[in-house]
Amino acid sequence: MSTALAPRALKLLKELERNNERDWYDAHRDEMKRELLEPFARLLETASARLARTAIPLTGGGKTMYRMHRDTRFSASKLPYKIHVGGLLTVDGTKKSEGQGLGYLHCEPGASFVAAGFHMPETRRLEPVRRAMLDDAAGWHRVLRALDEAGLAIDDEQKLKSMPRGFASASEHEHADSLRLKSLTVSRKLPDKAWTDGTAIDELVAVLEATRPLIEFVRAAV
Image (cartoon, rainbow, N blue to C red; front, side, top):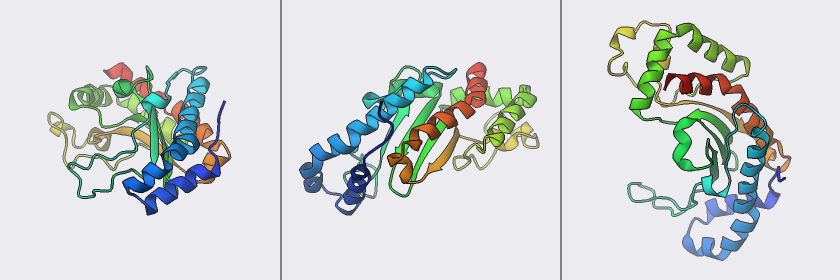
């Protein structure tokens, strides 16, 4: 199974960044599909096969990749295409089930990464998790410690400025910072060479396996 991208794949993304217009994309559409999009889908399939033998059998492929076209309706930037390619691994191999835990693979020259966890879940799904952080403080501490031992930490870029509604009394709790999180995800940056030497998939699988305590804690809470 495929574990790497050809060097041309990254060069195409760099060229797209310099030529982000429909005429260029139309002229390179077949090459983008052959050298980048289809091989990227195969990487997701390879990761799925490896995860099938673990306690977190997430799956993905072409159907869980994001479109290259940008939605410019509410954006100040009217550039028509993304300059990266990304795709999910989910419980049932569809984007609809991402709320049950996911893996994410992001290829962008100079800014690639892998991620895992729960990205921006609805408040109704976050509330029981926040309650569990209070009711089982020791259990949440074990999750944070396990991530730390794996060299990971929950991303805190998406965080409420104040305590969430219904949790004001927990502002001094040991897990107060965690209660303000809007996403429960971890990520790890990838060097460009990870795509051509095959280690991008290794990193994705490793991060997902290390995130298992987080995924299991959240699933138990909801």
